Amino acid sequence: MPKPKRLTLQGMSDALVKIDKLIKNEPDRGAALVGVAYLDDTLRSVLRDYLVQDTRILDCIFDRSGTAATFSAKIDLAYSVGLLHRMQFNDLHTMRKIRNEFAHSWDDISFQTDNIKQLCFNLEHSIEWLSQLKKRVSDEVLKKLQPRVPDKSNPREFFRFNLMSIGIGLRYRPDIKPLVPRQEVFRMEYGPLGNEWSPKHLKPKA
Image 1 (cartoon, rainbow, N blue to C red):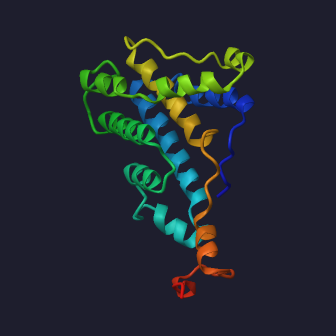
Image 2: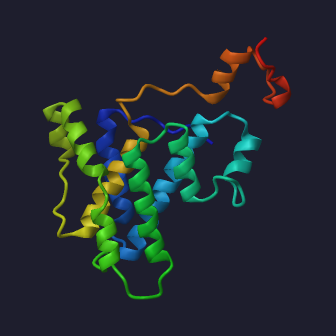
Image 3: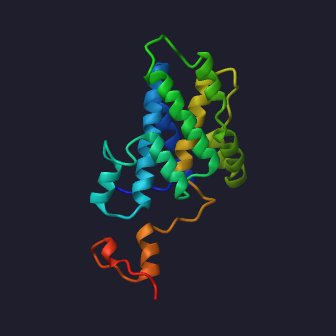
């Protein structure tokens, strides 16, 4: 699987447009399912890029019966290894709950349904992301991106904006230095491991 690309500031506008197109013409149920599927896939890519690059093990972790097969498990794993801050962790779980409300109901529900509306308004990432973005980019870039937090009277718009900010935040994190891949950590601790990644190579320090 190709490694996820880290966005440049100039690439953020294109990314926002791409995410927006995913849900623009979808009904509410479709927007929630497609939008959160995008976050699930993005988080999966970020995790695969970060963990030890052993394809056989990674496939086992992320396949249908693997330990990180579900969106919930991916969120918990990413937070546990330091790939998410607490607000991202909370909002991703909120997005998961919104997805589940639509996915597990036969009723004619929408973003205006009370419990879904409240979940949308519990999302916090877009407000913090917008604040950080304004501190880091030029006025020219801001003018191009035109970021703004929508009025809370429209829960679908609030969901859409948070979807875009979380998606961008997973890939573009100028405040966090690139993390050291896990196999490099063990290599520094135990020495070269060769081409095979196996516990038999790990020897405790004298």
